[in-house]
Amino acid sequence: MKNLLFTIIACLVYFTGQAQDILIKRNGDELEVKVLEIDLEAVKYKRFDNLEGPIISIAKADVFMIKYENGTKVTMNEMRPTVQQPVYAQRTGYPQENLKLGGPRLGFTVLSQKYIDHISNDYDTNVNAFMTQFGWQFETRVFTLENGTSGLFEFVPLIGGLEQGKFLPSLSALVGIRGAKGLEFGLGPNVSLGGAGIVLAVGTNFQSQGVNFPVNFAVAPSKDGARFSLLFGFNSRKY
Image (cartoon, rainbow, N blue to C red; front, side, top):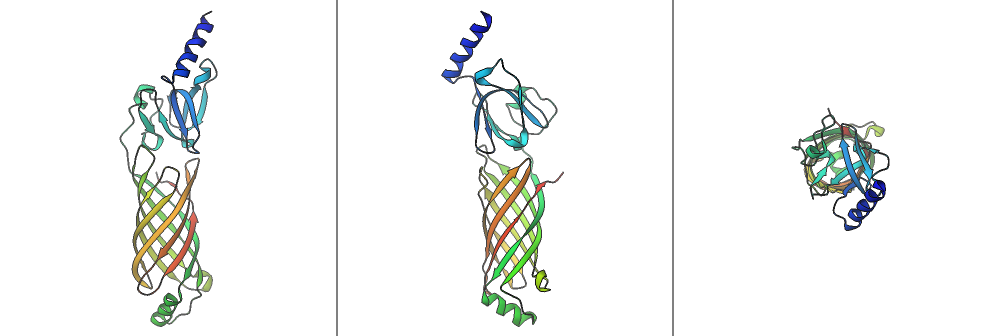
């Protein structure tokens, strides 16, 4: 009888929608749950439609946000992890810290004829319109809003033309925005052998188990010609 009453009460609460927590995964799935514990690596919960069932554990890296029954929203990358914090503490969230990431970037660049002519005249060297790029991305995530939108600063040094026996460096510094689903946009200054200009970049960012996999298309126009680049790579948090 006790179990029957418990089940009836749970069902009533479930259908009125007043007591469940909502766990939102990074792939967009939403689960109705009762959060029990959040530790360094995982979120532990029970399914709201089976509160007498087993405790389920999911990696924090796969969780984007938790919406608690009282309306509080907490995103995982805004939380300062501590060992086995009580649920009431997790519901208030933690002060945000700047998140620094870094990792390799590689891809290719297509040069406009005007840019090729400028390089040939000023540096007495011939380059092909198509060249490879290798470099590194330094990213600082300045803030993250409750809806998952992040403000970014990125510094990307690249070396191009190695397959041609050339050494063509470039430096880009971008200020950008990344949405909750990974779509990102950035704008900033660029310096290369062709001179100074700006760079405009758009792309997306995939995430798996705490590792980011960015893919970006960038255009760098200047008075000495334009460059079009497609870059990809990966980065992770720097401790």
